Image (cartoon, rainbow, N blue to C red; front, side, top):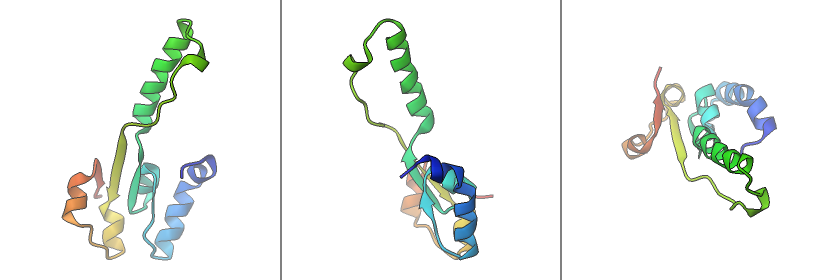
Length: 104
């Protein structure tokens, strides 16, 4: 689950997991910070969709009348550099499904 406390400490969490040689998974931010796998909704897609709602409200729509929407685009990020450092082998089938692979 992504929250402000997690987001503020993503680098610390990734560093502690690496220090203890534990694989970690969380959001895309965690994988980019040094975790093994990140999976979650696309922040950029959600921001784009939020802008559509803002536009509707500025044009006079009542917020209460707008439908609730759940994320529709999710991203899978795999950090191969961290996986290799931990001696983990990521299955090829998972690598093929990844939206982004961090290898250096």
